[in-house]
Length: 109
Image (cartoon, rainbow, N blue to C red):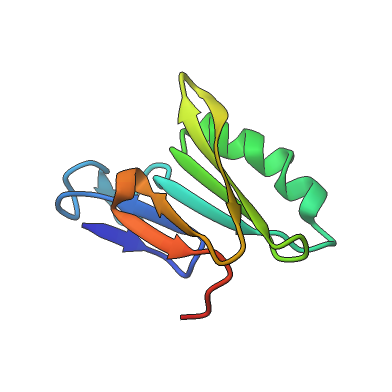
């Protein structure tokens, strides 16, 4: 089962409390996936500072989408560091979270 927030992060669990502990604030811990849509005014921060923060937090996959260049970059956490996993062209299908989630980059559906 996958649970997703408002389009920025997803956590994959077999049951709602199977992997992540719950508290009064909700599910604790880093999400499995963060999708970052770049904007020209914050792109520098998004691909540097946030990269380091998500990497340190243990976010397993980080998809950076650049709508200006019409391309995406999928990073996967391996041994504590992000590694390039895929370059995704506009209109291309990308599998996320071990194939549990698939999205077409640039799709509005």
